[in-house]
Length: 158
Ligand code: TYD
Image (cartoon, rainbow, N blue to C red; front, side, top):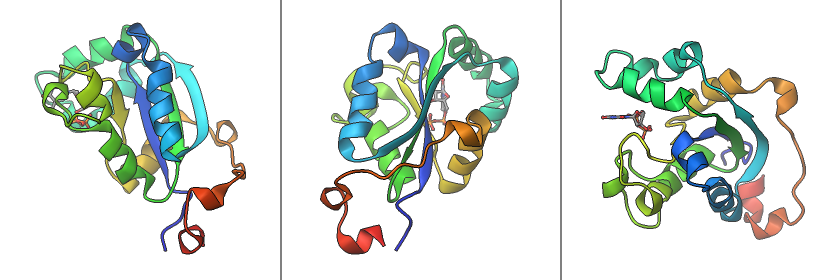
């Protein structure tokens, strides 16, 4: 069985902050059963955005998203759970908000490709790198959840 400590990085983007959706977004991940193990507000810089969006650095829209992402602060958070990376991507929905499935965060709150409310790590490998990029070890918390047995089956917790 896979670990229930799989971590993934979520960024609540400037559009969500300006639209007062921060609580709503955190709520969606929290009520799913994902465990919050780190959270803070940060100001992104060109340096960190070049690293974070390295796979898009050659795209014509890169300067546009970099400008957007650093125009206001963002919330970065780490959640943990069984297959958390995949689960968070499913809750997040497709990149293009206006075509994302209803019920997903982007499907419910976004009409845009740029202003699409959240970033979520897209693989376990990238999640490990992204968590390290934004959080020091002492900013992540390991805590025992009360009532884990109502979140997972016995064999899923082993
Ligand atoms: P990407 O990593 O492809 O998508 P996702 O966020 O779903 O993992 O793209 C990163 C961000 O870049 C995306 O959330 C919004 C922006 N973007 C654009 O502005 N235009 C585009 O055509 C694409 C593909 C992405």
